[in-house]
Image 1 (cartoon, rainbow, N blue to C red):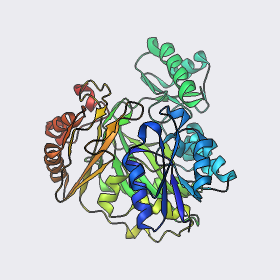
Image 2: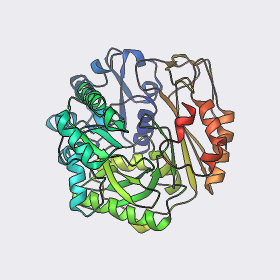
Image 3: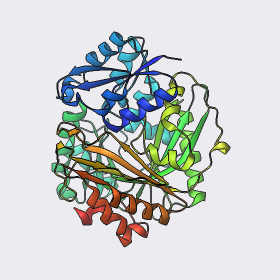
Length: 444
């Protein structure tokens, strides 16, 4: 097994990975920008290397600096966390050319999954339902409009190489289409360097249900159940739970089998997440597959007792999957709230020194955090600062435990979204199971 791994991400996920490496007896290397010099991952890692200034393009996204840090420290592998590098084909190929293990799926599979249209085509070939939409990347606005008209409005525009909500626009009516298409194309080019857009029928009352895939290099594939990620803001998840409050066991089992079938069809290895949209009537449609560890892997760990982060590392080093589908048992209900450094209702960024930090505790409460009293939350990066996760026997218990944990959580010096989550946990619609992705609109 590799003796040293460089963790090419920041924040709470870098700490999660460093802890897994320690338990596996593997040394860790943290990388940091000048703005993150005093970050917790820098203190916890065995070694740390500064890779550049605060500008993310000149530090965390700069291939040459990260690869040089790996070479200098003798790291035999790089874990990209869930940073943009985690699904960056060029970076994975650069690692491969440098003789460094990239902790993730293979480059061929990553290339296929990065093309959202190609992934849908593969799902269709496997007999898995897909959302009706265009089967090629579109850059011509009139051609795209013709596709939208054939599907019928509302439609949704998505970047072919997309992720993180970039290049995604819902278009309710024809009159809005051309402006939305131009904006989506520009955003896709600016952030993803690929202006290609595809058009799908918009399922306005669908739920976002995803399955955690775990696969080794010998073709053994299982899933670890599903997560409901329906509550989102600007196509970014803010609350996740497992299991879903509305997906029945029979449907979950059918979708899980479809997810495994799809993973096998593309010779998938390592961790991955197959995402579906599920309608009120119980129809499900393949949406995409993400080839990284997800922010919300924690709720899966809570209900299965399986260390997902640790398995990702072992699988990348050729470990055989020592679990069968029958070995996966689910216990209880888990919720996760993504607490960010933002105004809780206007979502404007907040930065500064944490003057007081008192996290909650007690049975069934987990806090994945990168902050502490005296830490500086800088304005340069993603605002996620803490993941608060609860586990209880059932959903009602998990909600009550989350509500209690939020009431105990004290973060001062910056604004956070804790007040928003306190309101949501008391919301009758949330407690009742809510309906679709529009739930959060009432709070914005």
